[in-house]
Length: 357
Image (cartoon, rainbow, N blue to C red):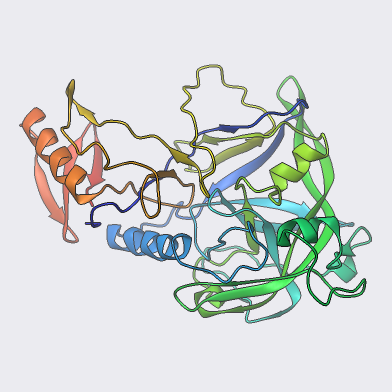
């Protein structure tokens, strides 16, 4: 169980909306990494522990606001990049900002993936629409918060991220056409593209070079202006809104950007000025009764709060809330049959088995 005042990570992706004027809708078909692969509860928790360690670790990030890419996550999508376009499998991640893919010149990038996909390295020289971003480019200076030292027109806009577990990724920024589908009416889609600035990973180390669950890169949907959805919105291509429409059968679904077409959507406000998608968790109710929890237990802050994260497999609670929740469930549902699976307490409810952490 997690110690008190650890963030609650929820494996549920809501829709997130920001002000904008355009109305087109782009869609990506999303797949689930663990589809057709039986994963132990301990494996899922280990996956989350690695991810949370990176999300919450201190980083050496000279391009402020890039975010925190990780090597594992739940959902991935296939996107086209370049002219002629090549397809790349990228992790859909609300916990990071930029889009980045592994470059042809990469040292330490994985050569194969254990999830059954063929990896592709991006080569800007092979795309007629690609251009390297110099350190004095507006995109680069906005990332740095100003002009870089020793910058010249022929010096690339570079980035480097160091993680608490020793992993790292480094590269440079390029601009190229990203292909996606756009809803054109009557639920039909047509191809669309837009020029997007993204990272070209030239070096990786640590767990990032592992073939386990490896993908071609990460498609960040964070709040920074460097994220792809922010760039599309700034160019007037879409509204700054996205939604993950879950597929309850195959576990993937559709990732829609620019619009939320389902009318039966419940909303909750996001907490402003936070690095991630934080929401206000105010109470937990079981059988009509609210748990008596400390009023500051879920207050947002450093190492605190409630985060909506597309890359986390399970839901996590602080120990104080967890114990009360279990006591309330056991009292309310007295006929539950409990059993221990892989050292986790589980019970059957409405035909499903839930692991409790």
